[in-house]
Image (cartoon, rainbow over all chains, first blue to last red; front, side, top):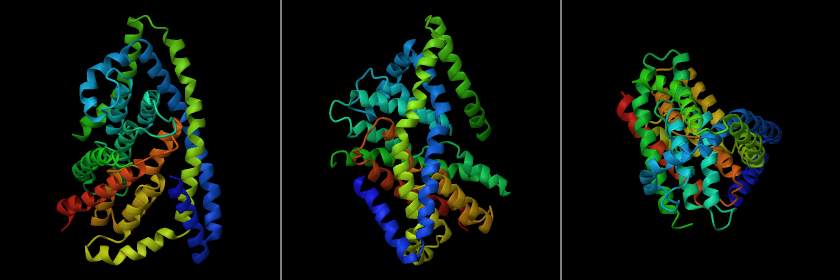
Length: 191
Length: 178
């Protein structure tokens, strides 16, 4: 990440110098740091709500029951996670919320799952484990059944048959979702 | 199909909340106390992810503003046009992993300039709808638990996005190209 970050900023400087866009770059720097704050803080409300709900479910034992129920499937993908880990139900909830296009609800579940995986991380707490990378791959691939925001834009623009994109999107998102998991499984041996 | 999925999307969260509360009541858990106890973490999650989000979003915004993407765009433009891929969708493909709001902006722009029923609009719709903003997801999820060494996470995200873009091109060609 050090190198990617350095690369992005240094190339920005070089290209800005060549293209004479230094003011744009400075402007982007100020604006985007502001919008990072807006995004992080806009998560607080929904995050607090779901973390509260997850806490109730955890203390009443519901999470535990659900985790045990789905762990046989989850074990196939997350091999090094403990069999009765609570991470499983949070991963399943994260996946389901994403699939239904409920990104706001998916993020708290995903973060909770990351925390569960971090608890099981017996090595360096700053280094991602294999399971963390797989969970991340599942999320960056962005599997969803109906692409709501895209449909909304097409409908607003007066498309004749906007729903015709649903099937192609479903095919593509499934393929990239599965390949994300496979790629992360292959790369975890290398890194 | 779409109606069913919409109904599920609307009903699922209230249903989950009800189940959690009813089961908690059955187990005689202190619902309100537990809720508030869990909810107070919400603020700290936001605080924890903030530095990661600033680092990544600022670097990407600077990169986009510097015109470095236009350079990449100019190199790839001609080969793509010979493959009958509309050049405007190229900037969308490059932006997809970097910025979610910029992607939706570009997508709207393509829909408006090419028309909502054009091939360019449909290909863009498939690309936009079938992927997530890799760098944002990494910043939020790893930031929240203080992971600083990402190992293969970024490469995985980018490779999966590339696979996705190729599939989007092939599938759109089969479904929409005439």
